[in-house]
Amino acid sequence: MTERLAIDVSVEKETQWIGSRWDDRYPCSGKKITRVEFIKSVSGQMRGDAYPDDTTLPDVNVHCWAESFTKVAYTLRVWVED
Image (tube, rainbow, N blue to C red; front, side, top):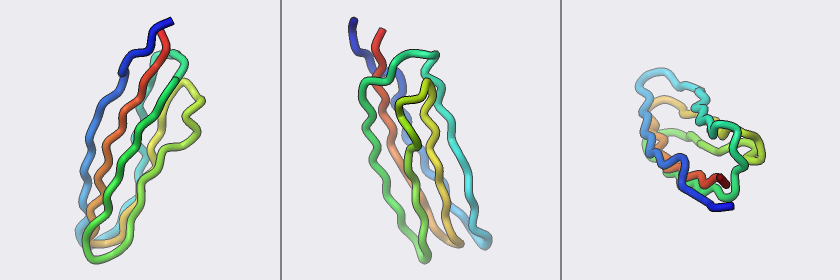
């Protein structure tokens, strides 16, 4: 079996007066996930976070939240087995 890069995304979201929570979902077409690389940054006046959930599932979900005037950015790379 060969390994290939299936997902390579960079996301940046910034809140204004009201904080926010959101989930980003990345389907892997039922392929077995072999490796996940996740890099995040949080900047601004308040707090925020982003993190992937259980990466053994056929999809990768990234949970994010940010308080007012906060920017959350992340890069997600997922390799799957063909």
